[in-house]
Amino acid sequence: MTDTVSQPTISTDAAHRLIAAAEAKAAEIGVPMCIAVCDAGGNLKVFSRMDGAPLLSTQVAQDKAYTAAGFGMPTDGWHDFIKDDAPLAAGAVAGIQRLIIFGGGYPIKVDESVVGGIGVSGGHYTQDQEVAKAGLAALG
Amino acid sequence: MTDTVSQPTISTDAAHRLIAAAEAKAAEIGVPMCIAVCDAGGNLKVFSRMDGAPLLSTQVAQDKAYTAAGFGMPTDGWHDFIKDDAPLAAGAVAGIQRLIIFGGGYPIKVDESVVGGIGVSGGHYTQDQEVAKAGLAALG
Amino acid sequence: MTDTVSQPTISTDAAHRLIAAAEAKAAEIGVPMCIAVCDAGGNLKVFSRMDGAPLLSTQVAQDKAYTAAGFGMPTDGWHDFIKDDAPLAAGAVAGIQRLIIFGGGYPIKVDESVVGGIGVSGGHYTQDQEVAKAGLAALG
Amino acid sequence: MTDTVSQPTISTDAAHRLIAAAEAKAAEIGVPMCIAVCDAGGNLKVFSRMDGAPLLSTQVAQDKAYTAAGFGMPTDGWHDFIKDDAPLAAGAVAGIQRLIIFGGGYPIKVDESVVGGIGVSGGHYTQDQEVAKAGLAALG
Image (cartoon, rainbow over all chains, first blue to last red; front, top):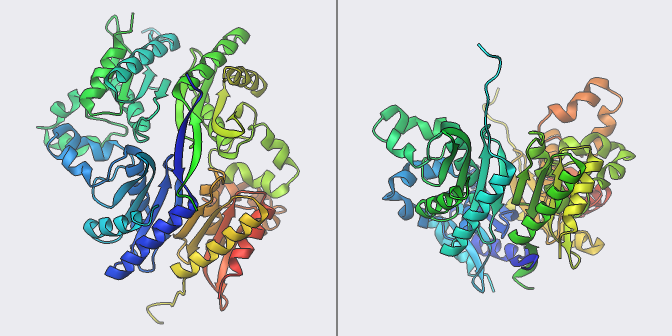
C-alpha cells in the first residue's frame, strides 16, 4: 500500500480568477454577492464580499463552498436528495454542521477530481447559482 | 448505597477491530466512509476517515456514535420516536446537541450493557447502517 | 498559470500503520496515549485513544497533529521560536487557535512535501515525542 | 443631535488592490502568506491564502485585520501597551476575543478615518508587517 494519495487542489491564482469572473456576473445582474473559494481540504482560499452584499452571506458563501467540496456535489442537489426521505428531511440540516441545502455552491472539478468548492450568497439562490457558474467558467 | 457503579466500556483493541471490519465492508460496497467508535462515556476511542470519504462526514460519524452511546438506541430509531410527538418533532434536533436522527449509529452492547457507540457516515444512511453493522459483527 | 497545485496527502492505510506503531511504543513504555493523524488539509484521518489514556489528551493529540501539519514543523520547535520574542511569548498561544507549543506533534513528510501531521498526548511531552517518532518510523 | 454618523469604509475594489500588492511582496520575499482585509465594521471583505501558506494563518490573518480595525492601531502596538500594566498583561490576550498582540495587522486609514484593517500571517511577524505595509501602499 502506498503512503500517500495524490490530491490536486485549486491554486490561489485560479481562485482569484473564479472570484473575479463571479464578481463581474454579479455586477452585470446588479446583485452584490459574497463569493468564497475553498480548496480540496475544505479550507478557505479566496473570499470577496462585494460592496453592498448582505453581511450574513459572509458565512453562507463559505459554507456553500465547504459543503460542495465536502460532498463533491452542488448544494442545490441536497433538497431533492432529502425532501422525500423523512429522517434526512427532519435531521440533515440541523445534524450536519455547515451543510447548506440550497443553490449557490458547486464543487470545482479538474480532470474528474474535486479540487475545491465555490460558494456564492447574496441574492436569491437562483441568482447565486448563476454567479457561481460564471465563476466556474473562468477555470481552465 | 454503594459509592461506585461498574461501567464496562469498549477497549481500544475492540474498537480497532470494529473499524477494520467496517472499513472492509465499505470497501466491498465501494463507498468510502468515516467511522467512529466512542466509549461508554461518549468520548472518542478510535476514528478513521477512508480515502475519498466526504469531509463533512468527519463530524457526523462522531455524532452518530455519540448519539447511539448516549441514549443506548440506534440513531435510526429517533425519527419514528419523535415524528408524531409535536414538541419533540419541532424541538429535539435543534435542542439536543450532537443529536443525529438518521441511520448509521448503533450502541455497542456487551451482556446487555451499553459499552460504547459506533457511527458511520459517507453514503446514504442505509449504506452507513450496513457498514456499521459489519463493524458490530466483529465484536466478541 | 495552472488551475491546480499537486498536494500529496497521507493515505488512510499509512495513517493506520503510524498509529499502530505509536501504540506499540506507548505500550512498551507503559504510558497509554492518544494518537492522531491528520492529512495535508489539517483534517483528521485516524485517531486512537488507548485504554487508560487521559481524556484531555483527545483534543491535545488532534491539535498537535494540526499544528504540525499547519506549519510544517514539530510542535516542540515553537517554544524556542517564541520564548525570547516578547510579543509572541505573550500572544501566540492565546492568539492562534489550536496552537500547541510543546512536544508531541510532527509533520509527516514524504519526498519533502508535508502530507499530514501526527500528534501524541498522554505522558510527559518527551514521552509523547518518543511515541510519535516511533509512529513516523512506520512510514514508507 | 443627528440620527446618523457617516462611516467611510473600504471598498471591495480597494481591498482587492491591497491584497494583490501584499501578495506581490510576499512572493518577492518568498514567504507565502494569508492576507485579510476587513471593513470599518470588522467584517471580512477580501481574503487570500497563497499556495503553501500555513493553514493556521487563515484565522490569524483575519484576527489581525479585525484587531487593527477594531482599535484603530497596529497590532504590534499592543505588546508595548500592555506589558508593564499588570492587569492588561495578565488579562488582555485571554480576555479579549480575537485580540492579536504581535505584528502584521494595521488599520486602514483614509483622511484620518479608520475605514478597515489589513492582517497578514505566514512568516515571522516582521515579515508579515513588511507584506502588510506593501498592501497599504496600494491605497489611494
